Length: 158
Length: 158
DNA sequence: CCGATTTCAGCTACACTGAAATCC
DNA sequence: CGGATTTCAGTGTAGCTGAAATCG
Figure 1 (spheres, each protein chain N blue to C red):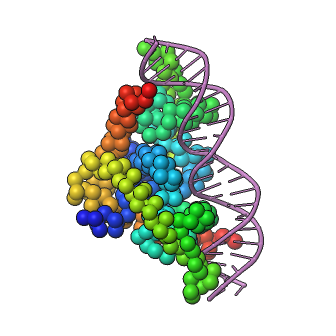
Figure 2 (figure 1 turned 180 degrees about the vertical axis):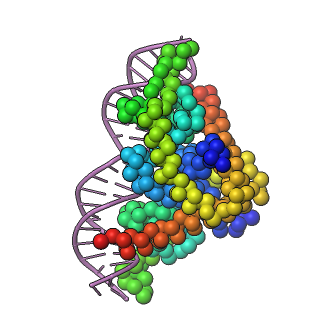
Figure 3 (figure 1 turned 30 degrees about the vertical axis):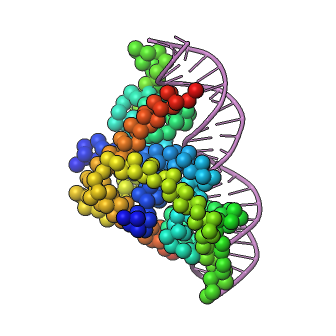
């Protein structure tokens, strides 16, 4: 067991390396559309889940609320999204894609599709499905862990 | 098919988000050992594959040769690795862990094991194995793609 | 001369922490 | 008052590109 665990690269590494490979490719392709990868990502999420607040987006993508908020503000300034206060809670700003935003997402989708396809080209349809499910479950595990850690911090820190 | 593709988050996103979640956790745990995540990663790879050059490390982890070299130089300055020229090629510097380096890798392994375990806690042993294999194959696909792109650039750019 | 490795230098994008205001 | 959201400000650093030297 000891030799097994030590001899194989950690899954964490593999994920990072794959992420790096994808990231650089996405960056250069999306640049042509005038989008950074994180801008495109945020817009994509909004395309599927309209009306999320920046705090919600931050939790979903495991970045800090401040980092995401900054991004959202920039997107609004560029006219790619609009934000309006939640009817029940005036502080919460819910974001929606503008027509320009939707258009850019579509362009980004087209530009990035070959990269995703390339990544998955070595997998069968069944494997892709399982891969996606596995990643989703891992993400859930990490997200609930965030909440658990928040809970600890609340009770532990003086 | 159209609706399927649009309705589900891209695998690329999922990978990035999981990577983010892992990264922040690894950063804070390893910091206690005086290691950054990439330092620890480079040391780990060397622990398994002794004598790699920084250029080889860079290719393996899909970062630029310059970025990796910088890291390797820092590791040498800290006395965690030594480098000696390849016998057949005086320019190539092959890296080896020092005793201090091996010790730190072990400490890092201990510190990071719970994080990896947490990530995989929601998966069965069989799923973990398949996950690892899938990630490895994706990494291979991206790495060979790098070489392909290098080839294109060589023949395409004037 | 070409290709790969290493190195130095400058730079930027991304995301972080801290602190404060607002809202329920 | 506590907890969440948003915002402003300061900060750090990981990784990039460019350019040059070395080597086979």
